Image 1 (spheres, rainbow, N blue to C red):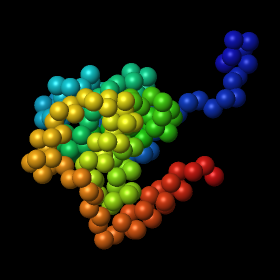
Image 2: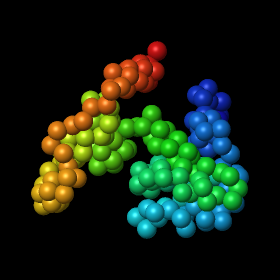
Image 3: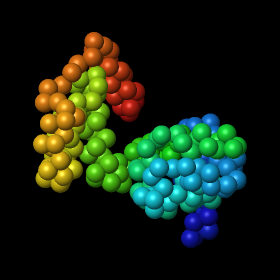
Image 4: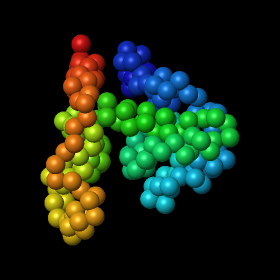
Amino acid sequence: MTATGERSTAPAERSLLAAVRSATGLDPSHCYQCGKCSAGCPMADEMDLKTHEIIRLLQLDRRERLLSSQAIWLCLTCETCTARCPNEFDPAATIDALREIVLAESASKVPRPMAAFHGAFLDQIRAHGRVFEFGLVASYKLRGGALFADVAAAPGMLLRGKLSLMPERIAGVADIRRIFERCQTAREPK
């Protein structure tokens, strides 16, 4: 009902819980908050929300708190949480779905360093079919604005052969580029 007593004709915003269920086919109510996922997470100490807390907020449909969390961007998608779950729930897929929802709703909510790394990484895969570390770091630094942060590590990495100055291409780079083109076409509005 509106303030004047009339029924609103605007469709209700779809709940975050419903969106995640639709995207993953998973039911977050299967998580009973044992905390094994958080106990095994290699990034738990860095996250503002632990994995089990993310799932609990999703169960409560706390959209704003969840989507403003840095935790969904710090997840490594290593799937340790999923492997440790005694109830065979998939927290890693759930966090991936949350990321996709944020990207679809408002890409400006993605933290700048995360967006910079994501773009730089995908550009390397598109160009070479694999990650070219030197190009990745250079592109990330230019996009992220932290040009000289940890620059002192570069000489040692070059000497130990950890950074190559020239990229290696895989044989199927044309196939990789076709995949990128198809994904781009699928995302374009119809």
